[in-house]
Length: 111
Image (cartoon, rainbow, N blue to C red; front, side):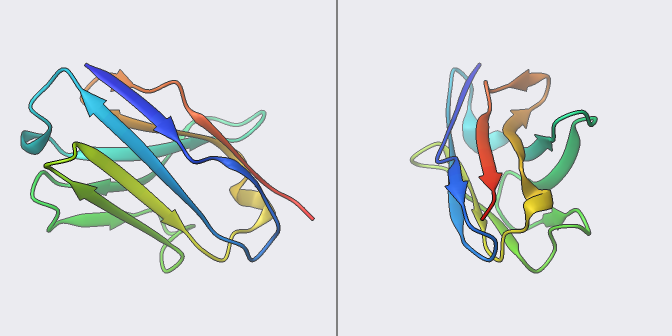
């Protein structure tokens, strides 16, 4: 299983970023996918999940209404559209399925 995140960067408060995670080495369309994040000095926290079909989606309260998770089963990617970003969204963002994790992508929200 390989997961590779991309799309992180520096953005001003109120801005937007879209993260992407490219998956390989397993039958992507059969598995739910998750995004997590870890801020400096804090525990890794769950952000959002999407089931294998894309129909069942859940969000952490801290991002609900601002972030949108989606997946493309043919392209084997899962995305996280992040809008109205806040400084407290600053973290390394990871995609995950089962016990596999990507290397993460840094998101920094700062003026």
